[in-house]
Length: 406
Image (cartoon, rainbow, N blue to C red; front, side):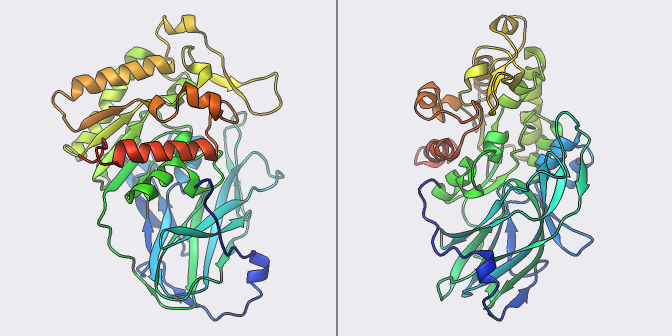
């Protein structure tokens, strides 16, 4: 969260010089729980991959961009209880990157103890998933695993969450501690299942705990499972079926921006796609509170049609629209059209589905907010806006009269 102190961080280089006896903690069948995953796969190396898409839907992934997005670890964390003062986690990350020679970006592994973020350790190691939209056939360049060490933790029993970076696929190879590790307390709070675009996934946020769904979940004391897929919130049935089959007490779907980004649908198809997505979710969760959220403010496509493109006159990332307001009258979609349509659909369906609710995305981030806290690329929220959205969603969805409190 913005402004939250990270205390006691130790550099990997210095920490590895410390001679602390550590004991292996089994990852499979052991005391540590992988939370925020739809399912967990065992790899050929004997490691574990937390997946955010159902097994039956994996073979239906349509392209390498979606494969990268659904493979990344948004909202995934290890949870356990321990008196350890030193922890180590061995991982093999896979990072989406534009070339074999581009510098590998750091990603942060965050340690939360008794609800407070106490350390964040960076790693730039791992495989390269080489992909660009100009050459969309991706390939992998193998890399090296890394060890994240968290040292100098307070003595005594404590509840630990180790959040993986939302930007990377992370194969968990080994966990070690200098004291016994016990299972975490059972989940007794609401289990929240959320789907959205890169704005929910976290793109351009500096770390996982600063993404708005994680921020909202931590503030509200609910258990998040994120099926937010950067660039791939397209009302796909493979996503709806994953949500249908996943355990959840409350659910939310934030839809619209990716469909306009790619100019993927016209109004007539969008209407039936929304109904179909909601119908599929209701097949598995007929009575659970379900919140449909429309897009937050995005100036280029508020009243113009998509697709969105990068401004060719600028060297920095800056989103503009290649569409026009006139094309909206011909059936193309703008965000204002999508908001009106989603509100209409929920209004009609809620006559027979009283647990279906609508939230206008402008209540999370609107035009006035954009004047005060502009997005750095005119599309994606940085930490300040992620924080704002998380605070507002926690109140609107999980507050005393929240839409997901039932």
